Length: 73
Ligand SMILES: [Zn+2]
Image (cartoon, rainbow, N blue to C red):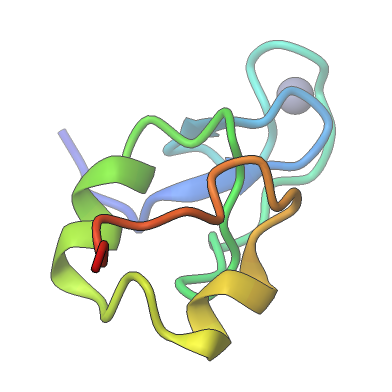
């Protein structure tokens, strides 16, 4: 089995390994490490690794629904 880079389908918002999406047949492209999607299953894990809570991070969010961080006080 050949290992290829993980690709991302913006149409289905899903990840795959082939050059084309298995769901819709659209061309897959490498996922952007800086783009956050509410559907991204890796999002939570990424937010822990990155500096979640910073201004840059907040701006990258598609919605400000969870703007309140745990920085209370
Ligand atoms: Zn697709």
